[in-house]
Length: 113
Image: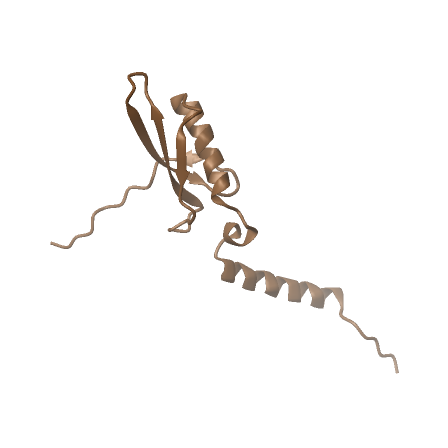
């Protein structure tokens, strides 16, 4: 009798694939499980404010959660313009994979007359 104990490589690969699929379903997206924080979005917003508005000292605030699951969070930057007025900028910045910032998505009003 030739009996071996243990698993074959194919069996282990199947188990790992199943675990990976389950983890992807549970997590929803990679950033929520990898510990990515709003710090990435804040850094992207700081770069955006510096490059576009020449305001490296802008006050920046980003939300902590991605409400629509697209990988971007809402950020606000406030800075003083040349006339002493406070200007505010609202954009969405990526909180993982360093994608930068973009204009927020516009939503059509709901028909509810």
